[in-house]
Image (cartoon, rainbow, N blue to C red; front, top):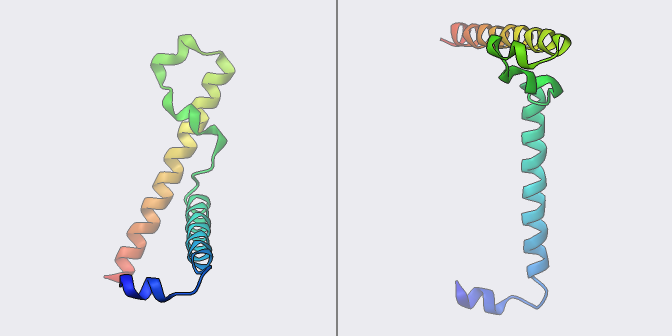
Amino acid sequence: MANFIETLPDGWTIYLWLIIGAVIILAVVYWIRWGIKNEQFDEDIKYVLFDEKDRAKMAPEEFAKSQSVIKSQIASRDRFLAADAEKRKSGA
C-alpha cells in the first residue's frame, strides 16, 4: 500500500479532500432531511421541558404555550407511532 501511494503523481491529495468533502456534505444533507422529516426543527421544542410544577415560575401566556406545545408533541408522537405500527402490520 505504501508503494502505491508513493507512485501516485503530485497533487493527488486534493482529490482525496474533495471526495471527503463531498461525503461530508452528503451526510449533512441526509441528516437535515431526516430532521425535517421527523419534525426536529421546531422552535417551540424548548417548551416541552416545562410541566405543572413550573406554573408559578412562568408567565400565564408562556405556561399556556408550553401546555399547547406538549399536547402537539404528544399528538405528533402518537401519529408517528401509529404510522410505525401500520408499517409493521402491513410488512409482517
